[in-house]
Image (cartoon, rainbow, N blue to C red; front, side, top):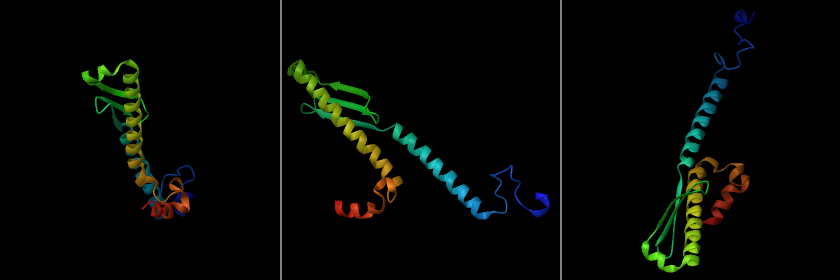
Length: 130
């Protein structure tokens, strides 16, 4: 009977033939999902870099905060174990902040003007920052 009336059969919710608005919404949804998947891939590659002890200790961390690299200049070995350990922690913390900023820079365009950006207050808050 549905073929006679030109209606979409109830068993096929993704058949949007004849319903242009539903087709447009579905395409918009698919575009948004693809963009979010790309964003997830980009965020997964974010790395942060931090330095301490006048650049003699350099740490690199993933966006999740895992240590991905550590370089200690031989001159930093003169610091002593406690000071070297503090420098490593300082560099790692700076790298984590850098990675967080990198992720926020990628997320910013996606959440601008949404509830995640502070909702109705978003544009007003942004104006206050300037």
